[in-house]
Length: 366
Length: 271
Image (cartoon, chains in turn purple, green):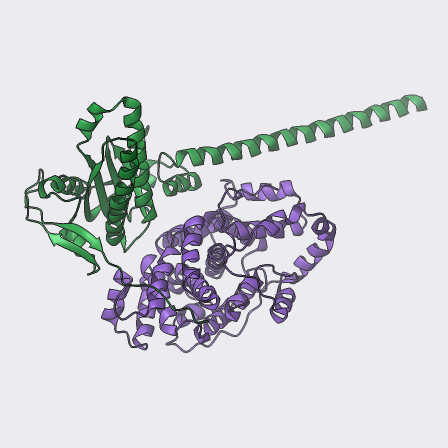
């Protein structure tokens, strides 16, 4: 099953796989299958846990159907040229019982013009959010709503695309080996186990059900985004990811905020930039200083890690895998493994969040 | 009679099997044609990426080329970089056509690499000139600094390339670069028969005029006041005397770019 992204150059992985039985058991419980990628992120628990938890298939979607979510997975992974995620989406389709031809037909389907208007609009939206950020997403959001998609489903579409933006960057930046995933359908043992794997995959996929809205303090960055999801289980899942990220001490909170600020400025998402600027004031950086630092990605107030990571965050906005991986390689030579994994995780999460925040927060759940 | 019925039944089964096989064969043939067309499209896409920025090609393939009116160009701030070889005409008269083409292709390649590396895209080659944009395809608040860094990388690449040329006994090349930032129309522009992803406005004209001023001032990289305004102190610039240029009423103030001294970024690993 030749991958359309097989030609994309891919470096050897930048982190060594770490055995973490507790983490691997958690992944198996959540996903029904061992996740070969999480051990590369094991150095920073919140990154590994978020990579497991933030999956559209596992109890987060209440309105968006699985099939459209799968198509969004294909479209966004193709857009971001993530070999690992593209192979993973294809493998999951194959595990679900589709033969290779059917998987290829599903891939071809995403370019068909005769798809039902809401599906077409959902794919266009996902593509726009990924490709052009908030500016393109705003226009595509209008088309999505005009195609008859409810606000709640539209928010889930934005979230599903953002999840891929997170996952694609995480796996591409770290150059997680795609080959085992790409070769899975060709492997004899995997083929023999396929009926069993299919059952496990199907059993682990679940629809979301209404949850108590997450109660983040209003002055926490992105509290508005979390609240915008209302009773959807997405809100609490996002809140957990944010809490774990801010609580981690591998990189300073100020450094992480500055990385979010760079992504906000680069997309641009003015709403996000305002939130980050407010949060940075609590870190003793006034608005004028923040504006100057974000304008030049440099300044005497920055420590060496911040200086390095503001520049790196910017490289994750619009990237080609080979160039992004070259920048990550340069980082690896200057940072510890923990710093590297957290930096990649923060940049990936910032890209996902800032891409969807403006549109989702513009039409919050009532 | 029964034998006749059996025969008919058998014939019907055979016909059905043949029809099913034929249908399957036709379906497989169609699928093969579709796969071949998809591969061909991917090959075309890769080939087109040489003629237009890859981002533009991807966008056209994904969105489809629509009517001009449905994809109107948008007004936005873009930084234009215009580079031109100094003394190209004299050199072109000295060199054999094949050698000249090889030298030019090598020059275009290393300049394009430097531009691409810093987030710019080459819009067009105009004779021996290069027109590149920063911030045209995607929003880029750091476009001016990127363009100046690209110009500095072009200077370094030119020096490397000249060393290669010297080893072959070929004359050294010298490039003049002008950079200006301003507002203009960005998007697909042209006739129904031929369109181009471009940037239209006074900005391109001024970048070209400022490039021409590099000869007047005896420097290789000049930026306008609008670009200088976007740069921080890590760029060392020298103000040049204001000059009148063709098509611009007011004298143009430009700044020669000397060097860029980034603050050290050596982080200390924690473990």
